[in-house]
Length: 113
Length: 117
Image (cartoon, rainbow over all chains, first blue to last red; front, side, top):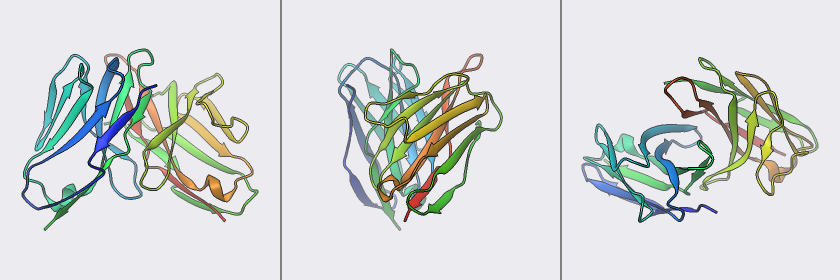
């Protein structure tokens, strides 16, 4: 059974700092990995999707990397802003089932002005 | 990106009543939709996979008679929480799979906050 773990559970940083969020998964036979953002009481916004054959994806100040063999992914946020404050969720899709997602418990990020 | 809506966004009901939550894909057809449940400060747990025109597939430990799922059209899936109790209070999120030509992406709804008194 796939298990996804995110470290740290919570993170508080001053505005402008670069930061890294970590995600690990136990079964390396994944189809893809996604990073989502969730604001309090809201649904999910997809940030980046990395296919299993890819090593990284970038969107603006966000960069996600994937090391499938070691079961790890990182989300790098450059020059953090207060508007980045949210919970960031990592989710993997298994090869055999296509789009079913297994989520980590998330990292709650607070960027202080 | 594609849009998925959920209705209602928030519902409060008395214990013992049934509550229906709708999930709609607004600009694409979704043969598959997923229903997730999220407890406070916890991750999303997949409850069931909803397939248009056939029975839903429930995850282990999810009572199918408690959480009725109907996927009657390519743009609508409903989750009915029957005889709701306070322990059913949670945030329910649906997603719809867009597996059209050249794509295979899941889009999430904004969620429904259910509070059972």
